[in-house]
Length: 298
Image (cartoon, rainbow, N blue to C red; front, side, top):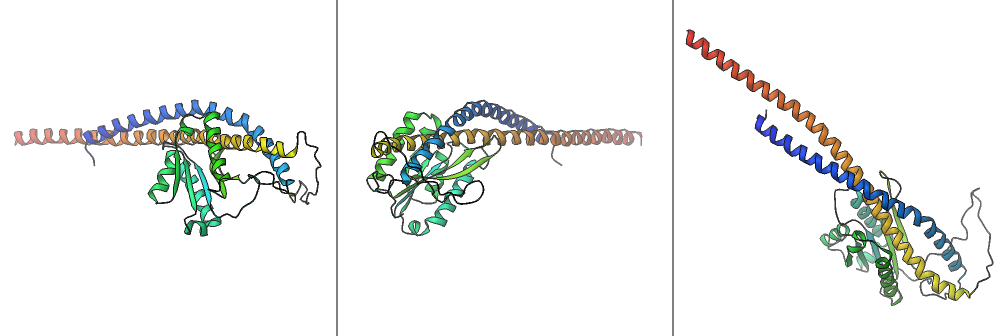
């Protein structure tokens, strides 16, 4: 059995750890509310913009925009959105696993030919790819720490420029979509080229939908596509980053809640162990005193 001094030391360190995890839980809970409100307000706007853009792109048979033309997946860039800090459970690990699964399922040949690159938004994902020796195109930690639309917009413009110049033939984004504080949904979205609407998509009754809409464009369809695509892509990336930030706070709050509960249980067990050790020590001292007294009598 451990000595009372060792148990007291463990009690003190566990109590300190409990205070830290409890404080981190409260901080994450406060940040989560703001991040959750931001992403939930933006999500319907982004969804409707993507629907409009996909619908227009599907009727763009002439390929008026460079961003709607399908290419061979010769050079692929995967944007991985993680966090800069840990202590958030399996938040970062799940994104990395999803990324590697995507690569092995869809771009295994490109990976073997070293034509798959990774772009880390957040330090944790970038650290993993660097350790594994995988091609890391860029690391951006500012978008996660101090997110704002201007920074994300400039970053999206850079990605669009590289795609237009032919540096990449396809760009995909992997991130955690926020559902609630305890649940994050792994998402993989095609960033470029802009995905077209599925004309054979089934309706609610399970039958194929064959509805074709004949739009009247004002101004011209070419001008609408030219103006709408950059805006939609910027907002899409902004939503992915906001989703990831809200998911990170939710994951950290849940992890710190469980850590605080575990620390509480450990403190109870250590106090019981300490009382037993202390009682044993007292009993031994009493036995020594009694034994000494008996020896003096004899």
